[in-house]
Amino acid sequence: MSARLIWEAPGKRIFHLALEAGEEAFAALTAFARERDLANASVSALGRLSEATLGRFDLRTGSYQPLEVAQPGEVLSMVGEIVRPEEGTLAVHLHAVLEFACGTVRGGHFLRGIVGPALEITIVEAPGQSLDSGRHPGQPGAGLALIDRAGQRFFERRR
Image (cartoon, rainbow, N blue to C red; front, top):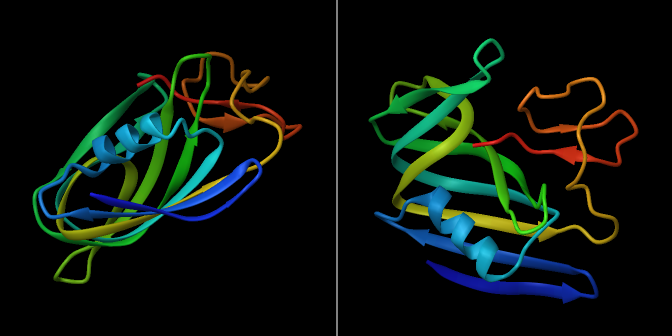
């Protein structure tokens, strides 16, 4: 992985990451976020994965049902957030849509993916008040990443 700081101002940084073939994207992004002490950041990515694991959240069980994708797919969209739901923790929450050779698409929570041949990620830190603490008042114990109705708090699912 190569990483570059594109822009910096008080409380805000923008990074560009270029992941190479064979890297596991979720682990690489999480490690980078820890190394740079990122929080309150939005993430977007484009590229291609040789394989991936997507997930669908099952409200009945409170867990992700994995969808293994064993074929190469173009990343049409990957968006999400990096937050600190509790002191000393870091949570990366991403969604992805992949397109395959036949023109079909699959999407879901991005849980894992092997880069092939490249994945480019942009990370934008948000200045100002943290969105990373508290629980959505209407969903205690839901286990989902939600912003409360006042738009001031964020609760990240447990993984």
